[in-house]
View 1 (cartoon, rainbow, N blue to C red):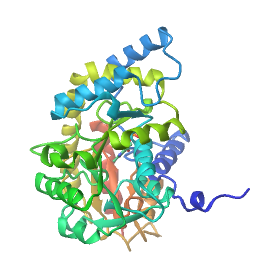
View 2: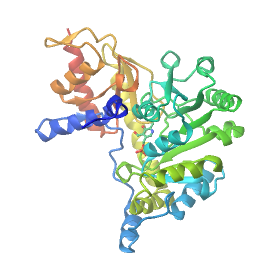
View 3: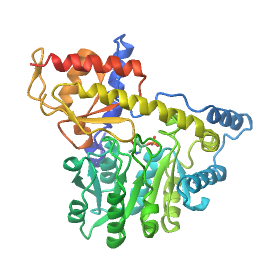
View 4: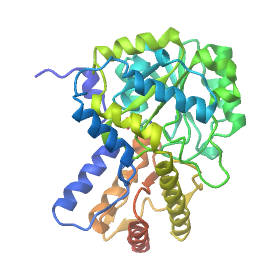
Length: 396
Ligand SMILES: Cc1ncc(COP(=O)(O)O)c(C=O)c1O
């Protein structure tokens, strides 16, 4: 069968691939500890389950309005009003089957072939693939020399007359960076000046630690409102990855198109999952706070353990649930005769030898680095890091 160039050029999701390999080794009875998946290990909140059950009992199992049930769109507006003081109308909210398809739909509504999107690297695996799917062009701006916070001079230099959008992801996957106020102000103002759309992916907004603060860009640059599409969802903060519910909020000038495009792809997101998300947004605040507390402890633990590792260097993460580290000093060495030529081989040999799954940085457009997702119990973190240290100690 003929396969389109577009499909052939697409890289499969590296995080999903690592998780799949780790699961398959686990099925074979291997004692795998996976730090691969970008999802909380907690159960979804009881309120979400209760609302879902009630929805099923009441027969709310049919198509819903394409952009989501009014109750959920209202709950999203109430959340944005309570948490950020932002006023949105339910008509300007689109509920989708996760943040991922909403980003895809937003790009579909913004890009003509050859249009450019600024992506700050290291960057989450799907941005670039999604941009390419619409024959758009990613323009990468490296943040690795500035603690993973983009430098406005670098961003300005990357803007061309074809720049349509910039994707801002804070707290950041994979680096754990939380963009500061100044950076966000500068980016917001640049977007307004150059008429660039901001895709503001704040899916990890509830997960910031220590003295770090997550800023909603529209509170810093209110004049960017007509240029901004906010992307968020229940996956990370509410431990609801499998329900597949995300939401986008933005100006009426684009949200209608986004809803229409979604109508031709998924129709609506799962009706029962939408009700579960109403339950989460309305009644799971305490669960979110408890999970945040646990993540904060895990972060402190893993950061301490990582400091003991030879060969690697890292910037302490301030948000999300990832540690991003550089392994350049370990590359070129070998483990029991197996040469560690690059980050992908490093992760492969580690997984096959010590059954510890990490994601290679090349998947995030940053070769020579590795991502750990620490959404694991403290026992697993301790044992996984013990094995990782042992592995590094055996390099020759
Ligand atoms: C930065 C970022 N944006 C969006 C998503 C997608 O989340 P969802 O589960 O809502 O599709 C993820 C998930 O890993 C992510 O890391």
